[in-house]
Image (tube, rainbow, N blue to C red; front, side, top):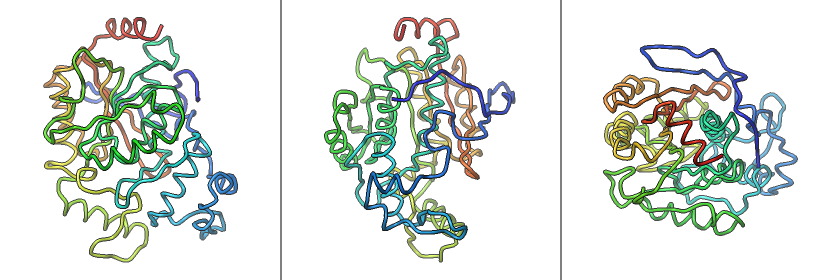
Length: 332
């Protein structure tokens, strides 16, 4: 288990814009196990099947073809075995295969957010809700192994949940700390999942960011072009994804705004609500929704992994005194 105090290294000063707190992170989190180059010999020792996907790149360094979905899945399996003691991980064809370093960063910065109300220490007893956990279940898997947190993972796809349950059942200690729930309503996010009297310390989400299936296909084609691959009518995306994993009416902005509006109903039962935001163009609409919901505090954490930039938005309905009381009562 990775333990540590909240840190503010490797970041630019907080920027203030229209009352929005934004913190830019210049590198992967200091507790992220994937800050350096992949140790392919060690990863191959952990998962020999990875060897067939490893070759020298244009610079003479060992690497994989990140445009190959099978290679990305094999790398993920090796990372999960070697770094997190999780075996038997796999996903059905076409399901979303997440990049583990970036997903781990989201969790580590969430840990720092919770540590603010625990005397600077990451709480080991936190309880988290992962909206749209998917067939890969990467957030509950990493969050449990890194910090010992308990998770509820929700999804509208029973096939995805069945695959995730298989992974949970295959690894000691996960079935006691990870629970999966089916969302039966495509129009609900928290409703039908958060049960009567239930409390969470944090929620997290990787929302569908395209507005339509055609928009998702166009995005996939752009990524293939950026990878130097030939155009195709239906190119495979290296990280996969299908249906509700990739798109919803209105795209990520509409989804997140709906999430914010629904979170009002559960305002006193969660310390921090959070979600990834893929497109910076979505932020103004999200900020308007947060102000309309009359949250007590919200902030944007900008993250970076090489040339790739991402961010998450966090909001709370509790004032500073209530947040400190929350930490004392639940973790101390």
